Amino acid sequence: MDQKIRVLIAKPGLDGHDRGAKVVARGLRDAGMEVIYTGLRQTPEEIVKAAMQEDVDIIGLSILSGAHMSVCKKVLELMDKYNFHVPIFVGGIIPADDADELLKMGIKAVFGPGTPISEVVNKIKEVLEQGVKMQ
Amino acid sequence: MNTQERKNKLIELSKEIVQGNQIALAKAITLIENEPELVFELEREYQDRLRTTNSHIVGFTGSPGAGKSTLTDAYVSRLRKDNKKVGIIAVDPSSPFTGGALLGDRIRMKRHFTDDGVFIRSMGSRGNVGGLNDSIFGVVTLFKLYGFDYIIIETVGAGQSEIDIVYVADTVVLVLSPGGGDEIQLMKAGIMEIADIFVINKSDMEGADLLKINLETTLSFSDVQKPIVMCVATSGKGVEELYSEIEKHKVYLNDSGEIRKREERRKKKHAETILSKRVQKILSDGVPENTNVSEMVEYVLSKFCKTRDFEIG
Image (cartoon, rainbow over all chains, first blue to last red; front, side):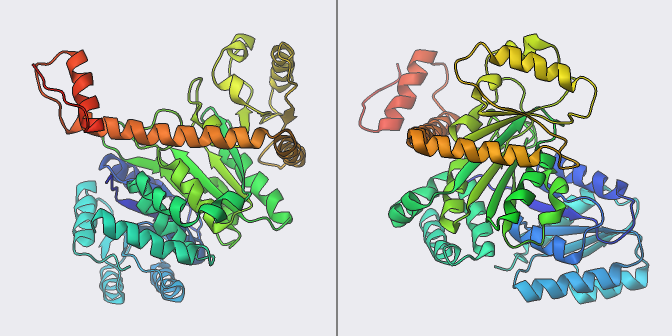
């Protein structure tokens, strides 16, 4: 058995700032994960379809546009629609109140600017070890 | 899950795959990627179906940044016009140090993300140095089982000797672009020999015509005339011609019986890949220390065969 953690890093919405997503993608690569990076301006539909085909263990969404509530809601709805459920974490500019809301909605973690990569790596491993990945 | 459970799981998934379930396909790929020998279960269960499925396997190879993904994207759009079902395997390199990988081929294929007739799977090379991934044969089997009309494999950015694609694909397309060196580079052995079709991508850039002349000159030494297609993948220029050259090659393979030979070649390489994995495992599980190489070889063989008697010392 040669198992790898597979992560989809996606940037939903219209903002073009992908530096954060690229830094995280690179950091997870260096932590031994297989990172599928889908680039800018993805719709929730595109993200969920990509995650299904790639059979990823977890999805990371980078959002700096302020649209995090509606994007996350839509992604979670589509997961229900396709009956494909994997944990999601969010990174970007997320106000504290919204972060709480997101966690209540079922997002597993929210990371703000300046989060050390090691923290993201550890959280991913923790979430996956808890067996959150539903079959 | 132990191996038997994973075998059962794969068979369970395979029943949904033949019904066209893409989530089941995705999960089965993960199983086989982690344990390539599981594919034997499918070979046994679906022998006839696999034998009669005529998925055409097209390989795109070439140096990093030559435009393989963008060209794949454009070619897939052409296939979709005819409503052909397409499965894509895009391989990118895994780190030799951490085992991690950044798989970025999908970025060029965004327009197909929500098309149910297209399935894209990214893979890390996971230690394979031939430009592919050791489980590629198993994934091709799964794609055949699903019933794709075309299976497209995009290799890692290949230099001169990453030629494993020739053992997997029915038609190999080598993507070149201007600025890759002089005609001596074209005369070298290895990747230049395995192409069935040459593409000069970015043909609107300076140096493309010279590359074409040099390539024609080089190819004129061989008996078989291989086509050269000038493309600009980003605009779609030349893609129709590439499509028809691939169709021509497909007809040639079937008419000449070459397709059977390539199938045999694929099976042999598949067996070789699995055998060498087994040998590697014995070695990495540990051989007795302070032995010389010949003893080490005999030790591995004895473990491998289990029928042989061999003692170190």
